[in-house]
Length: 320
Ligand code: 6CS
Image 1 (cartoon, rainbow, N blue to C red):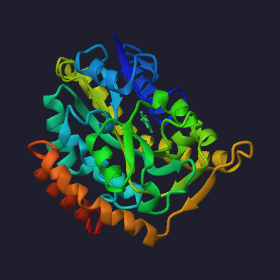
Image 2 (image 1 turned 135 degrees about the vertical axis):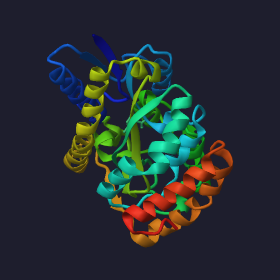
Image 3 (image 1 turned 90 degrees about the vertical axis):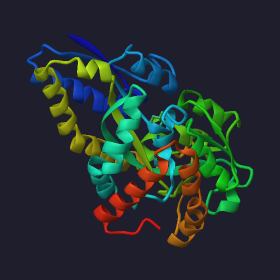
Image 4 (image 1 turned 180 degrees about the horizontal axis):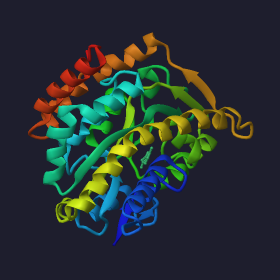
Protein backbone atom coordinates (compact mmCIF):
# COMPACT_ATOMS: atom_id res chain seq x y z
CA UNK A 1 0.00 0.00 0.00
CA UNK A 2 1.27 3.45 -0.81
CA UNK A 3 -0.62 6.47 0.43
CA UNK A 4 -0.06 10.19 -0.06
CA UNK A 5 0.16 12.77 2.72
CA UNK A 6 0.36 16.44 1.70
CA UNK A 7 1.33 19.23 4.11
CA UNK A 8 1.27 23.04 3.98
CA UNK A 9 4.90 23.44 4.98
CA UNK A 10 8.32 22.53 3.58
CA UNK A 11 10.94 20.02 4.74
CA UNK A 12 12.10 20.61 8.29
CA UNK A 13 9.07 22.71 9.25
CA UNK A 14 6.64 21.52 11.92
CA UNK A 15 3.92 19.99 9.70
CA UNK A 16 6.48 18.20 7.55
CA UNK A 17 8.34 16.76 10.55
CA UNK A 18 4.99 15.68 12.02
CA UNK A 19 3.87 13.97 8.79
CA UNK A 20 7.19 12.19 8.31
CA UNK A 21 7.14 10.86 11.88
CA UNK A 22 3.51 9.83 11.37
CA UNK A 23 4.50 7.97 8.20
CA UNK A 24 7.39 6.27 10.03
CA UNK A 25 5.07 5.15 12.83
CA UNK A 26 2.58 3.68 10.36
CA UNK A 27 5.37 1.87 8.54
CA UNK A 28 6.80 0.47 11.80
CA UNK A 29 3.44 -0.65 13.14
CA UNK A 30 2.64 -2.46 9.89
CA UNK A 31 6.11 -4.02 9.58
CA UNK A 32 6.68 -2.05 6.42
CA UNK A 33 3.44 -3.09 4.73
CA UNK A 34 1.93 0.41 4.78
CA UNK A 35 3.88 3.22 3.14
CA UNK A 36 3.02 6.90 3.27
CA UNK A 37 4.81 9.40 1.01
CA UNK A 38 4.93 12.92 2.38
CA UNK A 39 4.57 15.80 -0.12
CA UNK A 40 5.92 19.13 1.02
CA UNK A 41 4.21 22.44 0.32
CA UNK A 42 4.59 23.56 -3.27
CA UNK A 43 4.77 20.04 -4.71
CA UNK A 44 1.02 19.85 -5.38
CA UNK A 45 -0.11 23.49 -5.54
CA UNK A 46 -1.43 26.04 -3.06
CA UNK A 47 -2.94 25.36 0.37
CA UNK A 48 -6.45 25.73 -1.12
CA UNK A 49 -5.58 23.29 -3.95
CA UNK A 50 -4.51 20.78 -1.31
CA UNK A 51 -7.94 20.94 0.37
CA UNK A 52 -9.46 19.93 -2.95
CA UNK A 53 -6.94 17.12 -3.41
CA UNK A 54 -8.01 15.64 -0.08
CA UNK A 55 -11.74 15.91 -0.79
CA UNK A 56 -11.44 14.39 -4.28
CA UNK A 57 -9.18 11.58 -3.05
CA UNK A 58 -6.02 12.57 -4.98
CA UNK A 59 -4.31 12.36 -1.60
CA UNK A 60 -5.38 10.19 1.35
CA UNK A 61 -3.97 12.39 4.14
CA UNK A 62 -3.45 16.12 4.49
CA UNK A 63 -2.60 18.66 7.12
CA UNK A 64 -5.13 21.41 6.59
CA UNK A 65 -5.30 24.67 8.48
CA UNK A 66 -8.87 25.91 9.03
CA UNK A 67 -7.73 29.26 7.63
CA UNK A 68 -7.91 27.64 4.18
CA UNK A 69 -11.40 26.15 4.52
CA UNK A 70 -13.11 29.45 5.37
CA UNK A 71 -15.76 29.29 2.65
CA UNK A 72 -16.09 25.48 2.44
CA UNK A 73 -16.68 24.97 6.17
CA UNK A 74 -17.70 28.37 7.60
CA UNK A 75 -17.90 26.98 11.14
CA UNK A 76 -14.14 26.32 10.95
CA UNK A 77 -13.57 30.08 11.01
CA UNK A 78 -13.90 29.82 14.79
CA UNK A 79 -10.13 29.47 15.11
CA UNK A 80 -9.69 32.93 13.60
CA UNK A 81 -11.24 34.51 16.70
CA UNK A 82 -8.42 36.33 18.45
CA UNK A 83 -8.08 36.31 22.27
CA UNK A 84 -10.62 33.48 22.62
CA UNK A 85 -8.19 30.87 23.94
CA UNK A 86 -5.86 31.73 26.83
CA UNK A 87 -2.09 32.11 26.72
CA UNK A 88 -1.04 28.70 28.04
CA UNK A 89 -0.41 26.60 24.96
CA UNK A 90 -0.33 23.27 26.82
CA UNK A 91 -3.82 23.94 28.15
CA UNK A 92 -4.92 25.03 24.69
CA UNK A 93 -3.62 21.76 23.23
CA UNK A 94 -5.58 19.82 25.87
CA UNK A 95 -8.69 21.75 24.87
CA UNK A 96 -8.06 20.99 21.19
CA UNK A 97 -7.71 17.31 22.08
CA UNK A 98 -10.79 17.04 24.26
CA UNK A 99 -13.31 19.78 23.48
CA UNK A 100 -16.72 18.50 22.42
CA UNK A 101 -17.31 21.67 20.40
CA UNK A 102 -14.23 20.93 18.31
CA UNK A 103 -14.03 17.13 18.14
CA UNK A 104 -17.75 16.39 17.77
CA UNK A 105 -19.65 19.42 16.56
CA UNK A 106 -17.04 21.09 14.36
CA UNK A 107 -15.53 17.80 13.15
CA UNK A 108 -18.93 16.70 11.83
CA UNK A 109 -19.21 19.91 9.75
CA UNK A 110 -15.86 19.05 8.17
CA UNK A 111 -16.91 15.46 7.48
CA UNK A 112 -19.98 16.67 5.61
CA UNK A 113 -17.60 18.46 3.24
CA UNK A 114 -15.37 15.43 2.65
CA UNK A 115 -12.68 16.27 5.21
CA UNK A 116 -12.33 13.99 8.23
CA UNK A 117 -10.29 15.62 10.99
CA UNK A 118 -8.37 13.01 12.99
CA UNK A 119 -6.74 15.54 15.27
CA UNK A 120 -6.73 19.29 15.89
CA UNK A 121 -3.41 20.69 17.07
CA UNK A 122 -1.48 23.89 17.56
CA UNK A 123 1.70 25.13 15.91
CA UNK A 124 2.14 27.75 18.62
CA UNK A 125 1.18 31.32 19.41
CA UNK A 126 1.14 33.77 16.52
CA UNK A 127 3.02 37.05 16.31
CA UNK A 128 2.82 40.02 13.99
CA UNK A 129 5.60 41.21 11.71
CA UNK A 130 5.54 44.53 9.86
CA UNK A 131 7.33 47.17 7.83
CA UNK A 132 7.36 50.92 8.54
CA UNK A 133 5.46 50.63 11.82
CA UNK A 134 5.82 48.53 14.97
CA UNK A 135 2.30 47.19 15.64
CA UNK A 136 1.55 48.07 19.25
CA UNK A 137 -1.94 49.62 19.13
CA UNK A 138 -5.00 49.38 16.86
CA UNK A 139 -4.08 52.84 15.46
CA UNK A 140 -0.94 51.27 13.99
CA UNK A 141 -3.17 49.04 11.86
CA UNK A 142 -4.92 52.03 10.24
CA UNK A 143 -4.57 51.44 6.49
CA UNK A 144 -2.07 48.63 7.11
CA UNK A 145 -1.91 46.03 4.30
CA UNK A 146 -2.11 42.79 6.25
CA UNK A 147 -1.61 39.41 4.60
CA UNK A 148 -3.90 36.68 5.89
CA UNK A 149 -5.04 33.19 4.98
CA UNK A 150 -8.31 32.72 3.04
CA UNK A 151 -10.71 32.89 5.98
CA UNK A 152 -13.42 35.60 5.88
CA UNK A 153 -13.18 35.83 9.64
CA UNK A 154 -9.45 36.51 9.66
CA UNK A 155 -10.14 39.34 7.20
CA UNK A 156 -12.95 40.63 9.44
CA UNK A 157 -10.68 40.47 12.50
CA UNK A 158 -8.09 42.74 10.89
CA UNK A 159 -10.73 45.06 9.47
CA UNK A 160 -11.93 45.46 13.06
CA UNK A 161 -8.45 46.85 13.85
CA UNK A 162 -8.68 49.24 10.88
CA UNK A 163 -6.36 47.29 8.56
CA UNK A 164 -6.74 46.46 4.86
CA UNK A 165 -6.26 42.69 4.87
CA UNK A 166 -5.56 40.65 1.73
CA UNK A 167 -5.69 36.85 1.49
CA UNK A 168 -2.64 35.27 -0.13
CA UNK A 169 -0.91 31.87 -0.25
CA UNK A 170 2.27 31.76 1.79
CA UNK A 171 4.05 30.74 -1.39
CA UNK A 172 3.74 34.36 -2.54
CA UNK A 173 4.28 36.00 0.82
CA UNK A 174 8.05 36.57 0.88
CA UNK A 175 7.94 38.41 -2.45
CA UNK A 176 4.73 40.20 -1.43
CA UNK A 177 6.44 41.61 1.65
CA UNK A 178 9.63 42.40 -0.21
CA UNK A 179 7.85 44.28 -2.99
CA UNK A 180 5.48 46.08 -0.63
CA UNK A 181 2.27 44.47 -1.93
CA UNK A 182 1.58 43.75 1.74
CA UNK A 183 3.07 45.38 4.85
CA UNK A 184 2.87 42.54 7.33
CA UNK A 185 1.58 39.14 8.38
CA UNK A 186 0.90 36.82 11.34
CA UNK A 187 2.54 33.47 12.08
CA UNK A 188 4.28 31.48 14.81
CA UNK A 189 7.94 32.35 15.35
CA UNK A 190 9.34 29.15 13.82
CA UNK A 191 7.55 29.87 10.57
CA UNK A 192 8.53 33.55 10.40
CA UNK A 193 12.17 32.55 10.78
CA UNK A 194 12.19 29.44 8.61
CA UNK A 195 10.37 31.18 5.74
CA UNK A 196 12.81 34.12 6.21
CA UNK A 197 10.02 36.68 6.48
CA UNK A 198 12.18 38.55 9.01
CA UNK A 199 14.59 39.35 6.14
CA UNK A 200 11.90 41.50 4.55
CA UNK A 201 10.26 42.85 7.75
CA UNK A 202 11.54 45.61 10.06
CA UNK A 203 9.54 44.72 13.15
CA UNK A 204 8.14 41.77 15.04
CA UNK A 205 5.52 42.26 17.76
CA UNK A 206 5.14 39.51 20.34
CA UNK A 207 1.36 39.78 20.43
CA UNK A 208 0.26 36.21 21.17
CA UNK A 209 -3.11 37.34 19.78
CA UNK A 210 -4.11 33.84 18.74
CA UNK A 211 -2.68 30.36 18.38
CA UNK A 212 -2.07 28.73 15.04
CA UNK A 213 -4.44 25.76 14.72
CA UNK A 214 -4.15 23.03 12.16
CA UNK A 215 -5.73 19.61 11.55
CA UNK A 216 -4.49 16.17 10.62
CA UNK A 217 -7.14 15.03 8.16
CA UNK A 218 -8.03 12.05 6.06
CA UNK A 219 -10.36 11.48 3.12
CA UNK A 220 -13.51 10.00 4.75
CA UNK A 221 -14.24 7.39 2.07
CA UNK A 222 -10.68 6.17 2.21
CA UNK A 223 -10.77 5.97 6.01
CA UNK A 224 -14.10 4.19 6.13
CA UNK A 225 -12.93 1.73 3.48
CA UNK A 226 -9.93 0.62 5.55
CA UNK A 227 -9.84 -2.77 7.24
CA UNK A 228 -9.93 -2.82 11.06
CA UNK A 229 -6.22 -3.56 11.42
CA UNK A 230 -5.18 -0.73 9.10
CA UNK A 231 -7.56 1.72 10.73
CA UNK A 232 -6.22 0.85 14.19
CA UNK A 233 -2.69 1.55 13.03
CA UNK A 234 -3.73 4.98 11.73
CA UNK A 235 -5.64 5.75 14.96
CA UNK A 236 -2.69 4.71 17.12
CA UNK A 237 -0.32 6.89 15.10
CA UNK A 238 -2.68 9.86 15.51
CA UNK A 239 -2.74 9.32 19.30
CA UNK A 240 1.02 8.97 19.54
CA UNK A 241 1.54 12.13 17.51
CA UNK A 242 -0.58 14.30 19.85
CA UNK A 243 2.21 14.95 22.35
CA UNK A 244 4.93 14.71 19.72
CA UNK A 245 3.26 17.40 17.59
CA UNK A 246 3.14 19.68 20.61
CA UNK A 247 6.82 19.09 21.34
CA UNK A 248 7.92 19.64 17.74
CA UNK A 249 6.30 23.07 17.57
CA UNK A 250 7.47 24.07 21.05
CA UNK A 251 11.06 23.21 20.26
CA UNK A 252 11.03 25.02 16.92
CA UNK A 253 9.28 28.11 18.29
CA UNK A 254 11.90 28.33 21.08
CA UNK A 255 14.90 27.64 18.88
CA UNK A 256 14.05 29.96 16.02
CA UNK A 257 13.62 33.14 18.08
CA UNK A 258 17.38 33.60 18.28
CA UNK A 259 17.67 33.30 14.47
CA UNK A 260 15.56 36.44 14.19
CA UNK A 261 17.33 38.18 17.08
CA UNK A 262 20.80 37.40 15.76
CA UNK A 263 20.33 38.26 12.08
CA UNK A 264 22.46 41.41 12.05
CA UNK A 265 22.34 41.69 8.26
CA UNK A 266 18.57 42.07 8.33
CA UNK A 267 17.76 43.41 11.79
CA UNK A 268 14.20 43.04 13.07
CA UNK A 269 13.15 45.04 16.09
CA UNK A 270 11.26 42.86 18.55
CA UNK A 271 8.72 44.29 20.98
CA UNK A 272 6.48 42.40 23.40
CA UNK A 273 3.03 43.88 24.00
CA UNK A 274 2.06 44.74 27.59
CA UNK A 275 -1.23 43.41 28.97
CA UNK A 276 -2.75 46.91 28.64
CA UNK A 277 -1.74 47.04 24.99
CA UNK A 278 -3.24 43.61 24.41
CA UNK A 279 -6.47 44.76 26.06
CA UNK A 280 -6.98 47.42 23.39
CA UNK A 281 -6.94 44.68 20.74
CA UNK A 282 -9.02 42.33 22.86
CA UNK A 283 -11.77 44.92 23.07
CA UNK A 284 -11.98 45.26 19.28
CA UNK A 285 -11.78 41.48 18.83
CA UNK A 286 -14.82 40.75 21.02
CA UNK A 287 -17.53 41.92 18.53
CA UNK A 288 -15.99 39.65 15.88
CA UNK A 289 -17.51 36.77 17.86
CA UNK A 290 -20.94 38.13 16.90
CA UNK A 291 -19.80 38.29 13.29
CA UNK A 292 -18.88 34.61 13.58
CA UNK A 293 -22.28 33.75 15.06
CA UNK A 294 -23.97 35.43 12.11
CA UNK A 295 -21.66 34.37 9.29
CA UNK A 296 -20.03 31.16 10.50
CA UNK A 297 -22.66 28.78 9.13
CA UNK A 298 -25.77 27.15 10.65
CA UNK A 299 -24.05 25.74 13.70
CA UNK A 300 -21.76 28.68 14.50
CA UNK A 301 -23.68 29.95 17.54
CA UNK A 302 -24.00 26.52 19.10
CA UNK A 303 -20.36 25.64 18.48
CA UNK A 304 -19.09 28.94 19.91
CA UNK A 305 -21.26 28.62 23.04
CA UNK A 306 -19.96 25.10 23.60
CA UNK A 307 -16.34 26.05 22.92
CA UNK A 308 -16.49 28.97 25.36
CA UNK A 309 -17.84 26.52 27.92
CA UNK A 310 -15.14 23.93 27.12
CA UNK A 311 -12.39 26.56 27.43
CA UNK A 312 -13.76 27.82 30.74
CA UNK A 313 -14.13 24.28 32.13
CA UNK A 314 -10.67 23.16 31.06
CA UNK A 315 -8.66 26.33 31.71
CA UNK A 316 -10.57 27.63 34.72
CA UNK A 317 -10.49 31.07 33.07
CA UNK A 318 -13.23 33.26 31.67
CA UNK A 319 -13.37 33.70 27.87
CA UNK A 320 -14.81 37.23 28.20
O1 6CS B 1 0.88 31.48 6.90
C1 6CS B 1 0.60 30.43 6.31
O2 6CS B 1 -0.23 30.42 5.42
C2 6CS B 1 1.34 29.16 6.68
N1 6CS B 1 1.70 29.17 8.08
C3 6CS B 1 1.98 28.08 8.73
C4 6CS B 1 2.46 28.11 10.13
N2 6CS B 1 1.83 26.89 8.16
C5 6CS B 1 1.34 26.69 6.81
C6 6CS B 1 0.56 27.90 6.35
O3 6CS B 1 0.20 27.79 5.02
